[in-house]
Length: 328
Image 1: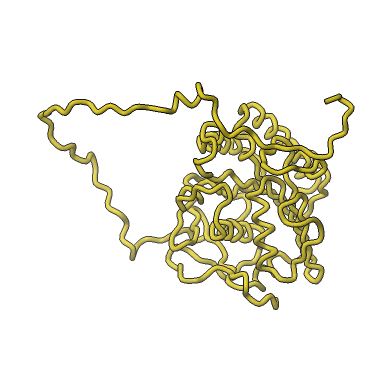
Image 2: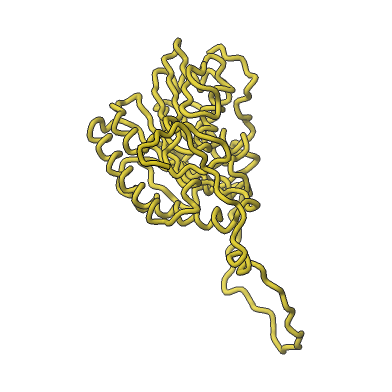
């Protein structure tokens, strides 16, 4: 192809079959060792640490707020509800509560399709949030609630983008460049999600991209320090597709890289990794329940007022249902 050829689309699918030599390293023949009788005694525990009594156990007492220290592990699931380790989240059991939280806000979702799930979920439960551009699944996706002045937009990050379907060249943009076009402000929120498409490539490519994004975040926060910036960490994925290149080990390492590179910035992490590990999820696109728990945590951070919270002792409230009446 000539250098001056104009590209209108690209196909990002990678060969899913590992090279035969490469695959041979992962084929192991198990050999049982002969059984021998050893004169051993059972190991005794070095210490005894009883579980806390449920009557005396108390979870965190502070609402999740921007600037809180990131902790690992980040929390746990109980009855399909995520409980962060160091703070409590709002319940958002009614659609009008979600609308009230989002009212007047501009939200930029920049990243992979796991972040696209966020805008799809918002469109599903908020009946007055109307998609204004492009069908779902194609970048960019924009949704607006004119009455409440809510604007949400998702745009995919630029290369690498591994996909089995053709993608328009104009459909993506480097995250750092997109950040430089955002003015920022107290009602502006940016969420970033990178990693899954970088797994098959050398870690140095991912690190260079993160460093460029860090500089762009610094410029954004200098323009307006009140801008809220989030980084949604990678989630676990299925192990049935080319596990050599897309292994969760790569995702774990890349999450460590994100936490290190963005250290010291006034941003907040959404720990999608611990959520999917705790939920025992092995899907590249997490279930609706996991997505809603991510959104609940996110909304708790961006809403200054939160009258309804839940801690580990209070777990009987349901999540917002998509068929609730949107009359808020």
